[in-house]
Length: 397
Ligand SMILES: *Cc1c(COP(=O)(O)O)cnc(C)c1O
Image (cartoon, rainbow, N blue to C red; front, side, top):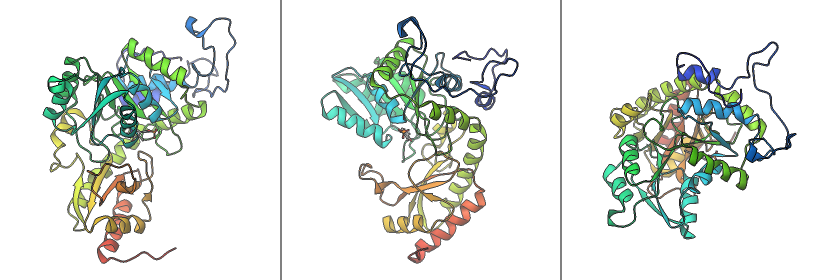
C-alpha cells in the first residue's frame, strides 16, 4: 500500500483513481479502507536516514495512501507531501526561494499566500513582484527582470481568487523555465480532475486539501506534489524540521472525502454554469465573473487547459457593498461563510476582509457552488436579489 503506484495495465481515468487509489493491499480479511495509525514513534533500530519511519514528525502510515492518491491524480512520479494546512504547504514552497531572490505572484493570489510573501519580502528575504497573471507580456517581463534580476520563482494560481482571472499556464511555465525559475501552481480551485499543472509545465502543485479534495468543510489540510526528487527532498526536509505535519485523523478524513470528488465536481460545475448564465441575465447583478461564460475574458484559455470551468463564480451586485450585504443576509439555503469547495454552497463578500486587495470590488460576492439541487440554489438567490433591489432589511429570526 505504501506509496506504490497501482500496477493496472491500462491507465485508469481520474474518476476511477479517486476511488481506487490508496487502498490497502488485497488479502483475506484485509480492510477496504486504510487504518488510522495513532503513534508518535515507531519500533526501530535505524534512523530516518536509513529509510525508517523513526518518529511521527517524519512520517505516518495514514498519510501514505492520501499522498499516493494525490500524486497519481496530479500525474507526479513521486508521492505527494501532506501538510497541516494549505498555508503550511505555501510556507514550504516559499522556502525554496533563495535569500535575495525574486518571486513573481498574481496580484490576486490567495490572500494568505500573498500576505505571507509580502511579510517575508518586507523582512528582506526576497523581492516580490505582483502581476496581472492573465497578461502574458506583463508576467514574462517580470520573469526576465526586464534588464534587472531574473525571477527565481513563479507563483501561479488559475483561476485566481477571487477575480477568476485565467493564466496561460503552458506559456508562463515555459517562460519561467527559460530563466531557471521554479514554478509553483496552486491548483486548489480546479483540483486535478479539472486541471493538471504538472503536465502543463509546473514544477510543483499546491493544494489546500481543506477545499474540494476533502470536500466536506470538516478538515484543514494541505499538500504539495512534484516529480523532482531534489525539490521533493527539500520540501520533505522543510516539513520535518518546521513541523507543520498532518494529523492522522485529518489525513484519513481527506481521503474519505476524496472518494466522491468526481461526482461532487460533476454536479457543482454543472450547477455553477447554470447559475452563472441566469445571474448574467439578472438586473440585480452588474457583472458575473466565471470562465465558463463565453463572455468571460478567460473563457478560451480555460477551455484549452481545463476539462471544465470549476464551481466558483463571482458576481458584482447592483447597489454596491450595502446591497451585497443585504443579499447575503437574505439567503436561506446558501451559507454566509468564507472558504469553498465543500458540499454546501457558501457565499461571502470578499472585501469584508481587511487584507483583501483594493482591486477587488466592494460589491463582489464569491459563490462556492455546492451539490444541492440547482433550482433550490437559484430560487434562494432570486428571492435574496429581490430583497436587495427593494432595499428591504431582513427581519431577525
Ligand atoms: C484556502 C486556500 C489556501 C490555504 O489553505 P488552508 O488549508 O486554508 O491553509 C490556499 N490557496 C487557495 C486557493 C485556497 O483557497
